[in-house]
Image (cartoon, rainbow, N blue to C red; front, side, top):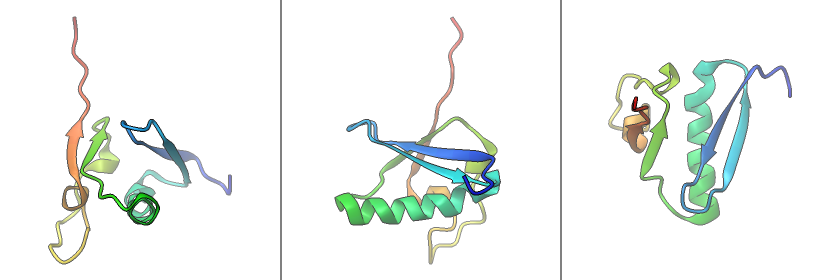
Length: 86
């Protein structure tokens, strides 16, 4: 897939619809997220309210910029998924 080593997936919990984007490096996740966010706004005219992650480093916030969506926290509320041990 064009030299992509990784992929990032986004799942809508309500509809269970899945979007998968190939990426060459993990640092590309944020630019793909911005593409995905714009696509969702056009397709379903809704705003992303929550982003659930696996605590991967690709979701660590970059320096916030109030003028634009330069970090994930400015785009959506992030809820890390944590595992509980029985």
